Length: 596
Image 1 (cartoon, rainbow, N blue to C red):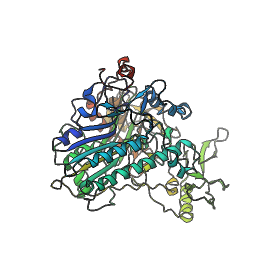
Image 2 (cartoon, rainbow, N blue to C red; image 1 turned 180 degrees about the vertical axis):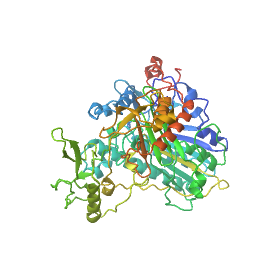
Image 3 (cartoon, helix red, strand yellow; image 1 turned 135 degrees about the horizontal axis):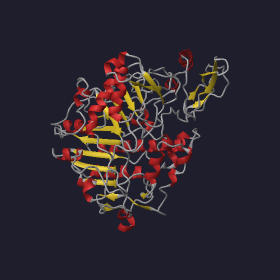
Image 4 (tube, rainbow, N blue to C red; image 1 turned 90 degrees about the horizontal axis):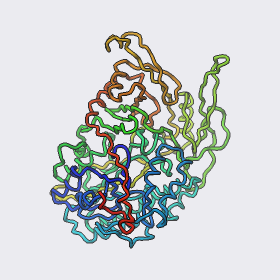
C-alpha cells in the first residue's frame, strides 16, 4: 500500500503490525520515546496508533493535510491531492480550499496521547508543536536517554502561514510560492526554538540531531526542486532526492560533506547502532555511522527507489552512479522557481544579455535570458531550420537540441558577469532547503555518555544560484526500439540483424536499438513488451537530462537483472475501500480509532 499511495483517512489498514518500529528498538535499550507531529501510518484500531507502536507519548494528528489553525481535517483532501500529483496546476488550483475551517466535512484531528485536544483552536501548528517540545524538555531529566521524533506539519499543503513570514518574499509574484517559502521560514524558526530548548534544559551537549525529509516537493503547491527533474510522487530525482544533515556537539569534524549513497531506510539501523541496540535482521537498511565518522567504505552501493505494479508497472533502481527507470516515472519537467526572474532586455539570438538589470535588496536572483535553438526537419527541402525557445521562469524548461557552444557561452558569460561562483553539478549543489514537503523529520536522540560515538556532520550546501541555472545539457528524448530474435537464441540474436519495432517515448527526437537480451529481461520484469526504459548517470547528470540507454546497454542489463532479483520481494499494494464506520460523526466529530 505505502509504495503506491498514502493511507486514506477512512481506509481500514495501517503499517504492518508485525513490524518492529524504531522507537520499539530504542526502548529495548532504555530510551524514552516521544513523537510530536504527524503520524499518518494508520489508526483504524488503537493497535496502529503511536502509543501502541513504541512511543511513550504522542502529541499530534493521525491523518494528514489538516488545517494549520483549526486542526480540523477534510475527508476529501488526500484523495484530491493524490489525483493532482501528475496533473496540471489549473486542475488543482483550488486544492488548498479543501480543508476549510470547521464547516462541512471537516473534523478534529489533534491528540494529546490518546485524548482529543480542542484547546489549540487558532494556534498555528508549527508554533504549537515547538511549544509542546519546549514544555516536554523542561519536565524531564536530561541524563535519561531520549528519542524525540518531530515530523512537523510544515511544509505540507494546505499552504498556510502567518503573514509576517511572507514579507521577505514580497518580490515573488506567485502567491503559493510566497506562502510556501514563508512556511519554510516559520518551520526554521521552530527548529531553532527546539535546539535552544535542548541547550537550556541540558539535553544538547550529548545529543545527535538528524534533519531529513521524505520526498521532493510538490510543484503544484509552491514547492520547487530545480534544477532537478520532477516532483513529489514520481521517480525522478526531484521527487526522490531529499535534504538531510546531522548536527551534534560530539561530532569531531563539523561541516564535512558526504557524497555517499544513503537511503531513508538506513536511519533505522544507524540510530539503533549508535544507541548500542540491535535492529531486526530481516529489514532493509544499513548502518551508515562508521562511514560518516571514520571514513569507512560506504556500506551502500545500490538501492531500490520503488517498485509499483498496482495500476501500471513503474520502478527505479540504482547501482553505483547509474539509475534505471522502467515504465512511466511521472511527469519530468524542469521547472525554475518563480523567484528566478528573467532579464527582459532583448538579446541576440543564442546569446545571454550583456547587462542584467539591477535589482532591489531582497529580490531574488536574476536569470539572464537565454534563447535555446531547437532543430526541426523542414519537410520541403530537408534543410534544418532553427526555432528559438525562450527560457521561461514560469514554464518547464525546454532543452531540445541545445548546442554545446551555447552552453559554453552561457557559462562563460555568467562567470564573467556574476558574483556567484560557477559550480559543477553535484549532490550538495542540487538540494535546496526550500523544496521540502510533508514535514521534515527532525530526529533528536540524547545519547548516554557511556554510549556516545564520535562522528561527523553531513552538511549539504543548500545554496542554489544562477550558475546552476545555466548548467545546460542536452535533453534528448528517446525512442525505444524493440528487437525480435526471429527464432534465434539470445547469443545469435545479439550478433545478427535485429528486427526493430519502434516504441515512441519521452520527447521522441531520435531513435536507438535495444539489445535482444535486454528486451527479454525487460519482458521478464514487466510482463509487457512495450515498457519505457531510461538510464542516467545521476552522479554526473543528477538533472537526468542525458538518457544513456543506447550508450551503456551492459549497465542496463545489469540493472534489469538486479530489478528481476528483487521482484520476488514485491507485494501488491493492499488498497481497501474506505468504510462508512470511519466517519468522525460516529465519534463526536473527531477522527478516531475503533472501526477495523
